[in-house]
Image (cartoon, rainbow, N blue to C red; front, side, top):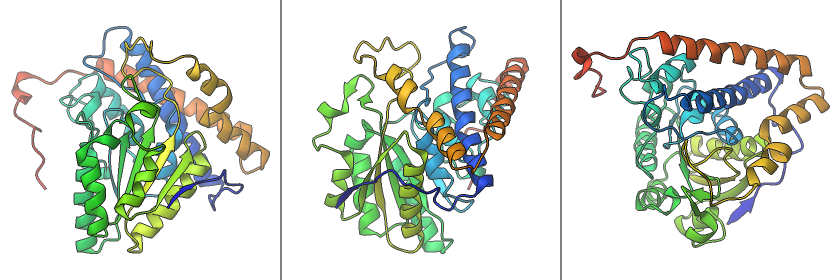
Length: 332
């Protein structure tokens, strides 16, 4: 039942405007993460950060198929998912700096950014914590008839967690409008997925739960988008869940400060030869759908936005003692 998605030759009905939006989404994620990488080294950012750079095509390829009815759940590496689902960038940066102007008033930090108004259920410090949340929102959408779809992003480490496996079983049994996106960057922290995952591919497990499974090149926005569009469309129409495995390489360590002694020069090769932004630019300019000048304009806009986000975050106040018991629980 597992299928491998070939590289699509078309732009999947995305016109110039949506293509430019997709590029802006990926460029914003990349610049955000590269800047957090640099700023974290100064010691001004508290706590841990896990960066998403290199994986942009996954978040963007999936989230451009979603709308306001849909929800996503994420991982500890969740900045890219937040941006792709529309969470405001300046609020995110302030949250990472622990400021009162942050998305969660500075109380969540990098691993707990959430914005329910955008359908972003939250980054999650618990490995495998997202899939059960997505089953809940998918069930709610099914019962209320909104046509909404729940999407959960999880890593290769979480693919072995009981919460993930139980959620896939539940989603199939209840025929939920859910999409499971396994982001396989090759390592669960420092443990290779080729060693820790019993099957050749995470997507092979889909057959055991009676759902379609597909493998896509995670460096190719168009491949991810095509797989996601089909899965989301099937879920909306009552066809049940799908498991998509996205394969790629993360550009930074598991966390900032990771010495990465467990892997060789795969990042340099990926940056030089596989990078999703380079491939996107090459494709849309070759087809004439977008021009280099349009993409350069997005690059400049995003650079300014990130500069402003960092400056405003640094200038913002931290929460006070009086804020200790506010914004702790969400009222539905």
